[in-house]
Image (cartoon, rainbow, N blue to C red):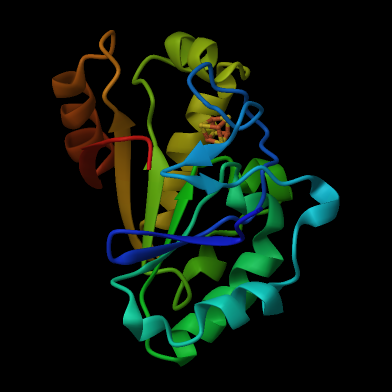
Length: 194
Ligand code: SF4
């Protein structure tokens, strides 16, 4: 059974889309797309309307936070994210989005002001401080690294931003932490994929 929402710990995750502008070497989006026994594999034609998520959420205060996630890049369906986030905030819940930070590129406009009041925390995957390594890991153009940093700097004016790095061996996490906290000026977290 395909899961549109799934609980991990105290948080409820929203499976927004399996689509993504990137194609990370470590991502199982095109594989089984299973997380902790939940089946997240979703065709574009199966992507639900906002109301389906809202009905599954019910009372958002039951959860520590509601996380717009994937497998996939949630800013591809930014209108749906905003509609569901508005419901959550109106009902007193907490919201987070896990993103690759390419949302302005994807939507062809600066979406960061629209995060204000709707998304409490933006978690952006740094993946690497080096644009070429970033491009290799995500199979994107190296210029997307600058795009992601620009998105981060803009987003921090409107909401709390955390840059995260998945514990990859070849990545120097200390270097990443210094870059994130000193140069970009947002919080840093090393994390598992979810
Ligand atoms: S950005 Fe996220 S969803 Fe997209 S390919 Fe990479 S890990 Fe998968």
